[in-house]
Each structure stands twice: as structure tokens, then as C-alpha cells.
Image 1: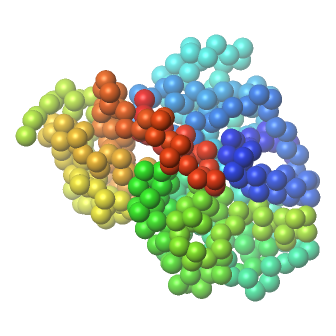
Image 2: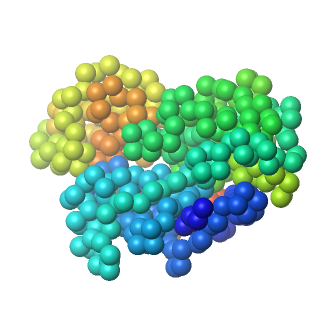
Image 3: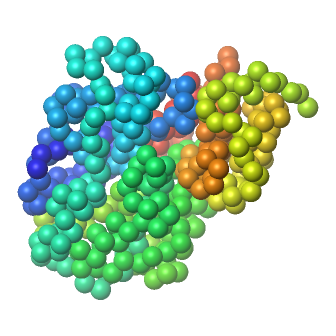
Length: 259
Length: 129
């Protein structure tokens, strides 16, 4: 299986671990990742006001590139995934936006939104299969109690993201089980870490991140895993040293013996 | 208290949602992770927009404490999606001359060695036009 692998800006700089282990694991699992040429930033946040067209155009370019090559886009970063997935939905379902995006960008092949945006975790579940991963694990993380931190961007809005049940997700817990570890369910696993507010209002980000980690710790987690560089930053920097936090790809690499 | 129905209509146009759909159940505010930091809580945003009292919202710090986590948007039983109203009102403010909330000159002081680029770009998209 070949995917158009979209790493995104942060994975090239501050979140190298997320990227490096994603590539190593894909190789070990027989999934081919082809990075698009000359990709640029996805836009990071999806504009919630419908009249923002320009803010969505960088995502449209990524989607048009994959569509013109008839491949699915594979994302790892939660923020990239959220923007690309929502913009693909808009292109498909909002003719006004689709027309404006095409008029503005002058593509050789018009963009239609007929392109799948797949998150790495979805690829593990739906393309590789958690059962196959279980068989390929050489260093099972037996006995390790791990809390899945979903955050916001993988799940919401549920209707557009279609990632999992936005209020009671299971995909990362299934992933943890496939690695031989024990998933820990805790109430704040799909509540916000504080996000970009850390820049301007650190006390608010600290309050949110500490609440998440304390909730995970209270339910018995020994560490927490995430797919988002900003969640990782907030939980580590603003979470009060409550628990260790890792990228999910790092644990996968460890279990597959490719770390 | 100033009533400005033009601004009200702008917000409705930007969100594409009729605020009168709100049944004032308060679920959005109950789930808001920034509740304590919001002078106007998500359900109040909807009420004030409906009443045309957009200027009060535009002057409030509440605009910059919304985390865009989409919890209110997901959990609203009426599909009113308060986060969209917060963003629309913030955009009205940012699009005014001199209305930007974050200046590039302010960024270097906010940086540390681990801060992901994602945070800076997000903040600019939310706080600056």
C-alpha cells in the first residue's frame, strides 16, 4: 500500500521523533510512504468562520496534489490531520468553497475533494490491522499501563473527522493492546490541553494540561501517549512533571524492535 | 448597551447559524475548558449576538481565551456550535484597522527551545489578520 505521506512543518523540526519512528515503523509494516514534492504548511488551524477562504488554501494544495496522483494522504500530526480532513470535506460538500478554491488556485486538474485523508492510527487499524501488528511485535510492552491522550483535533468535529466515537473513542486503546500493554481509560483523555493559548496565557495552559495528566495518573496510567506535537509540548512543559509523555510512534517503534 | 444589528447579521453570515436555534441549555458552557477565563461564557455569546450586543463581545478578553477545542461545537444538542460564534466575533475585531491581537514583534519573547512551530502559526491564525 502506497500513501502520500504528509509530515508537516513541526515534524521536521521540533517533533522529529514523531516523524522518524513513523517512517521506521511503516517500513517494518510494509507500508510505502511517498513524500509529496514541494509540500508546504497545511495551515495548522481550521478556520471556524465560514467566510475564511484563504486560510484553507494551503490545505487545498496538499489535497489537490494527492488527488491528481490518485493516492490517499497519510498524516501523523493531529493538527495537520484536522485541517486536511475538514478541508477535504468542505471541497466535497460545499460547492461555493470548491469554486472559490479552484478559481483562486488555477490548478491543471480541478480539486474536487475526492481524496482520502488517513491518519497514521487509522492506517494501522484499517490497512495493516491491529492483529497483524500484534504478530509483528517483538518487544511486547507487557504490564505497562498507558493512557491514550486523544485531545481535540483527531476527534472533533466528529461528523467531519469520522475518526472514532468522539465521546468514547477506542482506537488508541486498541493500539495500546496490540503492543501488549494495558490501556488506561481516564475522563480527560479527549479534553483540551490548552493548545496555542500557552503562548499568551500560560497559567490557563498549565491548568488544562495538569488536569489531563492528573486524571490519567489517578486512574493508574504510568505514561501517556499522543499524536500531537502541541499536546506533547503542553503536557510536558505545562503539565507539572506528573507523568512521562511520548509520541505513539515511539512506542510502536519500541514494540516492533526498530527504535 | 449598544445594539448593532448589522454586526449581528455579519456574525450570522460568517457562522451560517441562526442563534435563535439555541435553547439555552448551557451544555456548551458546562463543557468549556476555559469557562473560568471567559467573561462571557459560550451560551452568553449566543444570547448577546442574538440581541445585537456584539460590541460588548468584541471588547472582551474572552475572545482570546477560547481554545478552539470544539467541545461546545461537538456537544451542542441543537447544532448551534458556539465556537463558531466566538471565532466570528473575534474576526470582526481582528479585521478592524489596528484590531490585531498578536504582533510578530511580540513572538521572540514568547519562545522557548521546545515550543512547536504549530503553536506559533496557530496563534497567528487565531489572533492576527
